[in-house]
Image (cartoon, rainbow, N blue to C red):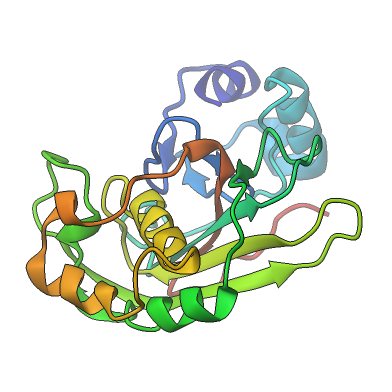
Length: 230
């Protein structure tokens, strides 16, 4: 993105993203900001600017929109919440290989949701944090944790876990999903979750699931983002 912007704006341009994710994780909605004194194309024809921006970017990155914000707006530090989704399929699915976790076990979504109901709140989530993750604090304010079933006549049931918080620890969502899958298979009881939260020991929780099935899907800010594309 920095290379593409530098070409379009005629000078070096830095980009600040809304945050980092684990290796292999995807984003269907990601916010980044850059500072620019203008540039004739950006000012005169933002839609053409976006078109040329996408033409320079590699195939796995696309710019959907461009917003004009205050000079002190910050993509990372201004964010008030982030939402992730993790996809799981339990039957062989050739179309889900790249973006869903193949977990060939029968799952009970009611048990998983009973367990997930213990997660929302402002608390220490160190039991789901990668060891030596380097965070200054393990406290997060989690507002949503829910499993939904996606019916697929061809490949059986698929499941998606949605979680929203003001911030996330390194490996947190993947560790949560692995832990909740242990509940969904009957290996653990839903009441295991508050025990883990109280104990705060990563080694006691479930294994982390692969990153390729995890998507950052939404970032909220305390102000409205108004598109400059026409």
